Amino acid sequence: MKNLSESEIVPIDPSQSSLITDQVPGATFHTKEYFRHGPDQMFLVRLLKGIIPISDILCIEGDAGKEKYLSYEMPLNNISTNGALKPLAQAELDVLILDYVFNDCDHATPVSDQSEVERSNIMIGKQAHAFFDFEIFANFWSYKGVNKEYLLRDFTKFSKVQAIFLASRLDNLIERFSGAAGVDFIKSVAESVEKTTGDKITVIEKALPVAGGKTVAFQSELLNRLKKMKAFLDFVL
Image 1 (cartoon, one colour):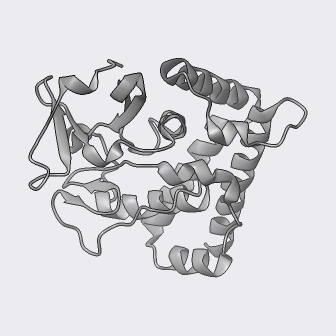
Image 2 (image 1 turned 30 degrees about the vertical axis):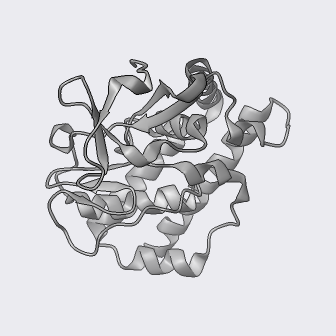
């Protein structure tokens, strides 16, 4: 991923747009992502890439050499999607995963299916959706558990097709993070982020030391949340 200096990025009139563009034709970024917890956000993006539609994070050189982070505006027309569900219906399910599993709870879908809607850190187009801004994920360990009343309310409003889709999403995530291969995957992602940013990842550093190390502690907690959510979904259905 190309690292750009801040001077290479040319802003659009901020009163007209929430995006900025660099000098590479067609590349746009979300301005409000000069954010805190950049390494943690990049970590989450790389963990979920290929399963949940999610915006790539770019690390740039800011003032006095201090790194800043931006996320790309994803080209929604180029993202493949599950044809059985409209983007809004899919986004509603992914919001639950980000909230109940990753404790990243500042995403919300619009109340109707509109074209090119941006609402609470989600872009929703006619064919696909994509999330951005994952600052709250840094509070992964502040998680207070699933409120089953709220989760039941969420699950029971979904169609059967949505329920099947959500179960598939959870199964794919559980498979990705399980076992020794899952530990290796998490470690490789963490190492790539630390190499790119030069900073440690908060959610790994805050993990309690267990046999196998902090990465195993993070894996264990992540799988516990995913499996609880999947078991509750199976029970409700």
